[in-house]
Image 1 (cartoon, rainbow, N blue to C red):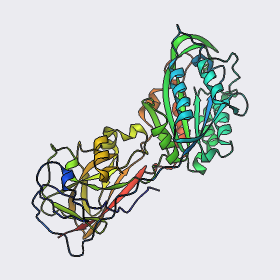
Image 2 (cartoon, helix red, strand yellow; image 1 turned 30 degrees about the vertical axis):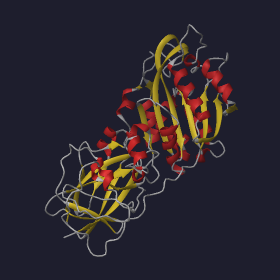
Image 3 (cartoon, rainbow, N blue to C red; image 1 turned 90 degrees about the vertical axis):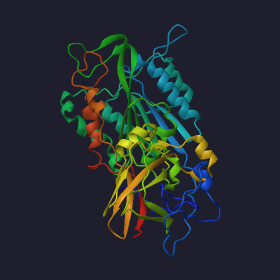
Image 4 (tube, rainbow, N blue to C red; image 1 turned 60 degrees about the vertical axis):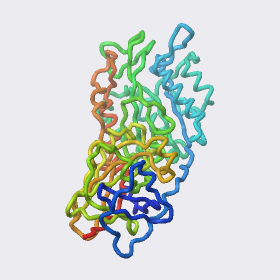
Length: 445
């Protein structure tokens, strides 16, 4: 279900448009936070019984992550990790995965980390140094590969797997011994990741390509069962599976500089802090409205009957994946709704708060982003404005990276779209919203 919160407004904040009601709650004036310009003349008064706004939300520290990293080390993966040297630059795989496992080892957000090699049996626990050696190419013999569904099933069958973040690194090439299994690929994947739907876990998929040296084993075995590559680029993937908020946090804080190819399924954020803010935080070039708005009874009282009412709100989105914190992404996907009324997100108004703003004004410290909303109509005496982030569906890059014949190596993976169809079918349609926050409104007629 979407996450919602009845907002408590941060203490003494002034909510204004160009003819904004000049109502100040509390004992400390925040007018100086608006900038160096003079205070604006007020045009209306709060209704009888208006009360002080609640204190700003306290910033709570998220629970530390417990992470298990699984690296498939089979003959088909060995080409990503050639033994290097001063005259041999590392492959993209070695750079990216080396950085990822190191960040998992040292990042303060991770309280416990375990490392495993996925070979032709159950995942084998190894020390961090041993996994780093494998990534550096310091292992001579790779094991026989495990078929993709069995590998995923074995990982999710590990003790406490559904309470941890499981990071799976593999080329995700599916070449079953029984050729009839190809026709059931989505169903096999869905069965292998059954705990995902049963425990309401999230799955994040990151795709990247890397130079590859050595034996390449395609899923389609004709005309050649294997090929020898000398630096051609082929894809590999990182899957992150676990409780939704933990997957989001791992993607935001640990998987630094993640590749552009990303897909998320079942991702939900913890309730973000959300509240109206001083309007002059937004771009001064934005056209202002002439309506009035002020804080009252843990909500906003406004009168949009003559002029639309604009105001800014703060959101704490640090728990989202880095790509979802991008202003362009948020502007495209955020939805604003107001039953019995009309509200919208103003174009070009979504932006991150700067470090100086967050550190210089304590009232802004709980938030990472600011956006500007417009209420053009409120027909009823009261209403509830909601801001939500619907979960995006499977992105277009998945189809572009899929192929039905991978015998000739290319930056595509056999049946990738079918694999992720199995993942997508593990969730309801439509996907639940990533978050929803709500703001009570009162019509000041």
